[in-house]
Structures are given as C-alpha cells and as structure tokens.
Image 1 (cartoon, rainbow, N blue to C red):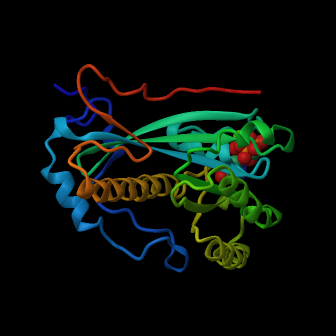
Image 2: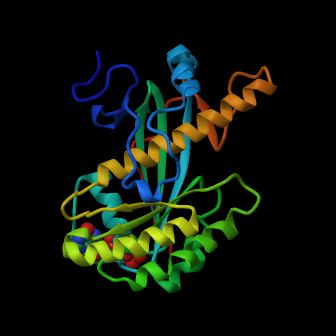
Image 3: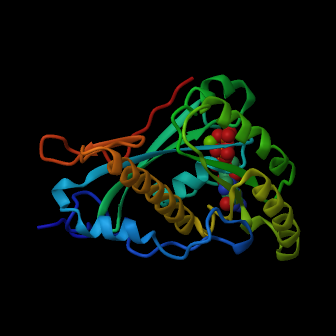
Length: 267
Ligand SMILES: Nc1nc2c(ncn2[C@@H]2O[C@H](COP(=O)(O)OP(=O)(O)OP(=O)(O)O)[C@@H](O)[C@H]2O)c(=O)[nH]1
Ligand SMILES: [Mg+2]
C-alpha cells in the first residue's frame, strides 16, 4: 500500500508533484515553445512503457542571478513551503532535489542554488557544468538586476560549451513588492530581454507563493519532454533500451532512488 499523501505507483513521489497536464507558460509573449500539450510521441511512449522498464530521468537546473534577488527564497518556497524575510547569503552553492512523476514516469529535478555575491563566483561557477536548465533570477523591484541577465547567461554558457542546448528561464521575483503599473513597465523590459536571451519569462513571489509552483512544474515538464524526446531519437539508432541524456538510471529494487532532499554547502 502507498503511504498516504504519496502517489501509489512510484515510491516517494508526493501526490503534489504529479504532472498529467502540460503546464502553461507564464505569458505568450516570451515562451520557449508554442505548444499546448506534451508531444504525442512522449504521451505514447510514456503510456506504453512498463513501469519497471522506465528509466529515472534527472535534469540539473542552476539558479543564478545578482545578490539578494531571491534565488534561495524561490527554491525554499517550492521545496520547503517556507519563506524567511531575513536575508541569509548563500555561501557558494546549496543543493535541493525534487522528485516528480510526469505522465507516469519518474523525473528528478536537481536544483543548484548559487551565490550571487561576487566573492563566491569562482566557487559557484564550478557548479554550472552539466546544467540542462538555467534559471536567471532578477528582482522585479530593482531593475538594475535585470541588466545583469545577459552576463549571467554568458557565464552559464561558458561552462557548458559543446554540451546540448540549455533551457533558459528569466524569472522576476518579489512581485508582491511592485505596484501593478510599475510591474507592467518592468514586464515590458523583461520580455524584451527574455526574447534576446531565448528565454522564457516568469514573474513570481516567494513571499505570497504567486506562480511558484506553476513555474517549477513548467521547468520540470519542459526539461522532461526534452530529455525523453532526445532519448527516443537516440533509440532509433541503437537497440539499447536505456540511453541516458544527462543521467538515466534504471529503476529497480537494487538501485533505489536518491534521497528526496539533500544539501551541500561549499565555501
Ligand atoms: N517581499 C519579498 N521579499 C523577498 C522575496 N523573495 C526574497 N525576498 C527577500 O529578499 C532577500 C534576499 O532573498 P534570498 O532568497 O536570500 O536572495 P538570494 O538571491 O538567494 O541571495 P544570495 O544568496 O546572496 O545570492 C531576503 O530578505 C528575502 O526575504 C519575495 O518574493 N518577496
Ligand atoms: Mg541565496
């Protein structure tokens, strides 16, 4: 029997992390795709795979941006359902893991929450490598932090040269601090920047929890879709049934999934 509150088919995936519907983008003007549903090949593949033959997909997301823009608060709101109004600088990097079940398939999102402070940059940048997803965070109440977005993306790209294409999000935080009229002006600029960076734009508030869950579900679903599509393409050219993009782990009793959440700090 499944634990109460947890989805029955895949151990340790909370019912609050089950995705069956393709999550919508935040706004039509700056989205990374124009689709309104999972690719039909993915729906078909996920429904036809037997559960014990499904590989566990893992994607790595790095969360980068200026100091104190709200990176840690965003992750903590989603992963710990908590908000702390006091600022505690991230030293180097923090690490969280969230397990999802998307179209009956297990999917793990690693979140690397990096320090914005200049003095920790050389440490934090070492953790950019191997990223599939880049979330560039800026503070909607401080437009200067939007101006740094290009610099942050370039830093992430530098560490991932030659790897596959990065899935990029531009996330404005602290929406609760901005009056509606001001927000509209900031949004215009943010959408322009997002288009230049080929990024999808989101506006959230860790304090009020506005759009936080929607954002992470969108990240998980788009990265899951990309991973499965690449896996299906590779399968066309090889008879091997389990091919990893990023990391792909066979689910079986001898290979239990990693712990739900862990944390490392480096300095
Ligand atoms: N009102 C409001 N305050 C926020 C929000 N998100 C973060 N803050 C506050 O902004 C400050 C900085 O938040 P952090 O999440 O620590 O910022 P950070 O980007 O992780 O900072 P570094 O780790 O130094 O790079 C804290 O005092 C938070 O309480 C939000 O959505 N609304
Ligand atoms: Mg932080």
